[in-house]
Length: 523
Image (cartoon, rainbow, N blue to C red):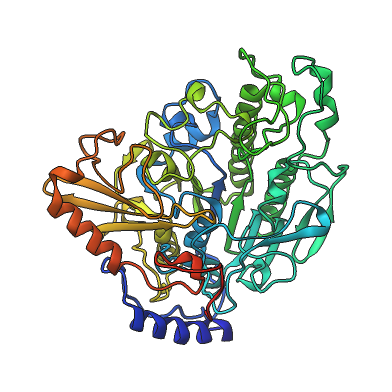
């Protein structure tokens, strides 16, 4: 076991012992390093997209955006209908995936930005601590080559949080989430060095030219570039798989699309012909203007779908298809940022809420898994799982123990149909905004014959004015009716779970009773 893991286990285990654990957490022993590489171990490709809703792909009912390869993947594999993101925004959601801890125990509980949007100001987000045990650490210690290709968002340039200091042998992509607001940046990162792209710098929030006609397509030419970063990610993933075909590998492929800005190559956009209203940036954070926002968003998703198809074909060509598990999902719900028309695409499949909400539209994700010969083709599974379950699942696949710090439960039995599948009695989230309005949520499974969601608001209320909301997910999956006043005992149970499911954060503003300025405490 590497030194960083040994140090991490002792410190984090002690802190959890003092602070209490999630009663639904699995308890296992620390991961042990494999004595030698086992070439019989299955490869794992985990594909994460950005701001894609539950209804944005064909296997989950999408009718306007074409995703034929994901449909084939579902036909040849399994669709999970009850898989939850780690959070409702990028950084804490990805942290839950990487650490196997929900946001009541994890280090990163919100988007904490550093630096600015200029290349010279690239600072990234609050970095993962050097004592973190990441999912890459687990796989690396099991004898896997490990790579992240895509968006990181858990530590900026020069920090302890960069992927190559968090268990990944290789990294290619975006370090800073703010840089990923532009799909035509001047550079990506290769390990810890800048990798230049053939693009002139473009501010991701530029504003529309004063006095320009928004219906004049030529006005939008000034915002176009040629070197599409998402295509670079696909090409790099294909190259990585080819180079590692003879040894077990874990590839975390994290596309930055379809997160705004809405940008795609002209030839991809031309494949769609919708009635359009140009987006000029006046709303939703002033992203890069788009003449055809509907077609562009669809093109971004279809481009990812094409990448998935190319990747699967390569696995077949290399003869490693049967020995590779692919999982596809999204980091949180969709957003209207950049002019995305979520209603037109039915992006949440009629679920209530979007990104930044704890309604299911903000956290219930489409997930498709494919593993020929291991996963029964064409199946659907309603097992309730979340991002923090991925670490113990991959540890199970790699035949090592997951760290005892995880809040997750392996869903390998659900994938393969072999063995008894453990279940969560509850799932917990918390989300902290820099402007206030912090929220907690807990999903309680199979209580009085139903699954329930309780959301508690701090420093604010829901859109309906409630401080506490209770929804019967079994009978009201769109969360339309707040039943809190009629079910005080269920609310009391949920609030108790909320209190028991979190430890104090080192970041003062990530605690619900914080006072004063945003100051950090020792981690």
